[in-house]
Image 1 (tube, rainbow, N blue to C red):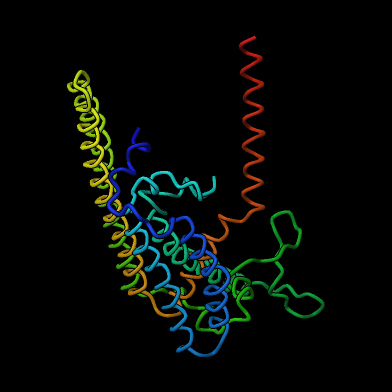
Image 2 (image 1 turned 180 degrees about the horizontal axis):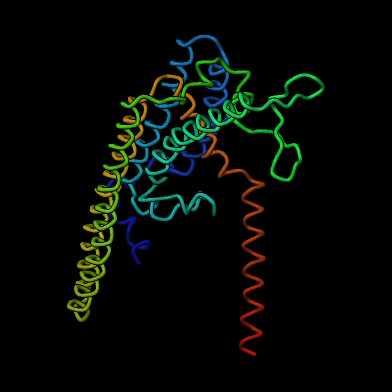
Length: 314
């Protein structure tokens, strides 16, 4: 019912462009223009160019959320049910777009990865110091003997650095040994999210419950009067949509704020790797081969469960 009557109460009845079309163009720019630019500048030697491309990509995300605000104000229902999202993206959505915890979890992954890499590197250094084995008369620091006596490669921080050998030292080492100020700020950002996210969840839940109560009660009281039920239900829908708009705008402010906070707390090299990772993550979840593989797995699973149900019922 909400879907049917919602267009009657849109704040801007003549939307110039469907949001799904905007998102398609926005995503194409991210994938085909801004991410390649950022990667080239990451591998380059100019901090100024890198800083420019980092800010371009950051503003690309910020402009997206401002456009999402406009879409929510025009027609919040389209953000509740987003047909342009695939089956991999939809579980990541929270109040109209990706969950803000995705931002903090990604940044935290960089922090945790470097802590682990540092520990591995220290452990490997201690082993090298005490290991007197040689390979063809030359000490081979890339080979270790496991508990069964077989030689196996030691994977530590050096090997991780090999993956970034085409990148400047400042980039490869950007997230190693993060400052106390950065880790403290990340803790604060995460703490704020743990408070705000449940509050917005409860607000959304209460809005939905209140709408159902109102619309049923108003319809029942007006059901015998011609036209009265339509007016009453229409007013309920309009009120509910206004609350949805308010919730979506708050959620978008939260996402924008988290991005700004992370960008403000990180160096240009850290921010570059963070934004590169964020873009890669979003692009990866729209990979056609991956989506197709997941859909096939779902179909096989549904078919298998269906056969089990039929065998039980018969």
